[in-house]
Structures are given as structure tokens and as C-alpha cells.
Length: 356
Image (cartoon, rainbow, N blue to C red; front, side, top):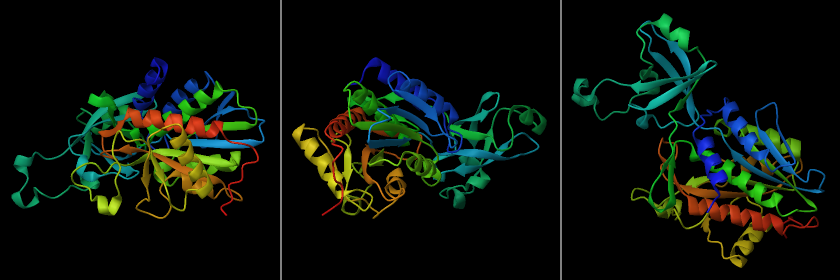
């Protein structure tokens, strides 16, 4: 399992809020960690964080995990101090009432809760209806607009209150495992590779931004790197809960290894290499055809960079995605790190990824 340094980094990253477009706090945490083992660490104009080893090598591998998360933004403060907001990313409105949040202001964090009318006061005919986001508000504990405006401003980002809980069997629960767990894996892989003294392979670890708004950070990062190989690490839908139709979405279980995908975003040759490496090293993994033919992760935009990139997506099975209690199994995370480390270690600069 992971070292104390790695575990401390993961917890710190998960406890640092970073709604899409406002990822700078998480970026600082990420770059600080990368700086302890990468040859070069920097950020770009988008806010992507880069850690590089062997920058002058002729063959480039890009590892991408996005550290932005879904959240909200203030759009209005009413006369009695309540805050109205809009979503940033794909929000499940059913999960919102009664949620603790934090407003990320220039002067620090302001705690609040998403309120609603008590069920006792809701008419019977409306009790089973979900509430639209526009009809919800955030209460920061003040009674008037002037006081609220001294604390928060229009446009301030809002995040779910950070949480980090370890359950039995190495199951980790947090609001932002999508996709800070992928960013963590990318960092752990380049950390492992930094100790292997690779000669002809340059590795670029990128904590990407604005994935939840359309894969925006990965697009610019891949353009600047122009890698030979690009691997995105994200979360995938665990289908081992009772309410998911496996005939439609396939089988993906917590604790059975990372998911390898077979769709248009995944280079066939690279996919075969990942699978053969897993089998040779007895690393458990799962197969997925995906519920869509293409898109949805950073892989899609990396693949289409310049003249094209050999890409692959590795996913960590995740229960309760886009809620405040996402869940992954740390054994799957460890196996993903092993698989990527071993695969990249075997790459040769003459490797041909053209399908034949």
C-alpha cells in the first residue's frame, strides 16, 4: 500500500476544494508534491500543473488526471442575506438540500448550508418533487445583504464541504474523488518512474483543470506537450450496487482492479500493451466497452491533438459519482499505479502505435 507521504498528500488534495475554473488551491498542493521528485514543475495560463522527468527525451508520455470538481458560483445575494447560486459542472439537484458547503472568497472560506423549506411545511402534492437549483439558497448565518456582502461576493466559487473517510476494506469516501484520485495516481506513477532512471522516455504528469466544463485543460496541455502516448486516469461507474442494470452498463466492481476501456478513444496497440503488461505482472483489471463510443474524459481531446496521439483511459471504479460521498477502493488505485508504472517502463522509442 502507499507510503505515509503519499497518503498525506492524497488527503490534503481531497480536502482542498477546487471547483472547475477555480482550481488554484489544489494546484498549489499538487505542484508542491510533484516538486519533491520531478525534474521540473510549473503551471500554465489555464492552471494546469505539470511535473516532468527526462524533458529532453525523444519519446514523450503524458499522464493526465483532472483535479477540478463540480461546484457552484454565487449569482445573487438577497436582502435578508441568503445566497442564490448556479451549478458549475454536472450537479445532481436531488442531493443538494441539507448539504454543507464552503464559499471560497479572496479572504478565506465561509461556511454555509443549502437550505430548503421543512418537509412539514411542504404540501403533500409537492413532497416527492425535486427542487430546482434556482429555488434553493445558501445560508451563511447572517441576516442582511450588507453583512453578507462584507463576507462574500458575486461570482465567488462554492464547493461541497471537504470530507475524507476511510471505511472497511480500504474503501475511501470523499466528495471529489472524481477526479482527484486520478490526479493522485498520475503523481504516484511519475514518482515511481523517477526512481527507475528512464533513459529515452520523458514523462509528463499533468493535473488538468476544467474537465467538468468540457475537457478544457487537457486540450491545451496536450497541445503544448504533443506527446507520443497520452493516458488519462479518471473514475468510472461502479455497477455493483443493486440499482444499476449491468446488461446496459457492464460489470465494474470495487476491489477488482482498474478498468481498461475498448472504444474509439483508446488506441488498440496501446490497449494490448496495457493488457499484456497486466497479465505478465499478475495485476488485476476489469474490461469495459463504455456506454458511449467516444468522449467524456480527457482522453478524447488528448487523442486529437495535432496529428494524433496514442491514447488510453484507465478508470477507477467509483460508487455514487457526482455526490458528496463518492467511494473508491484503494486496492484498485494501487493496481492502477503498478500497471502504469510497469507499462511505461517497457516502452521503447521505436514503438509503433499505428493499428494494422
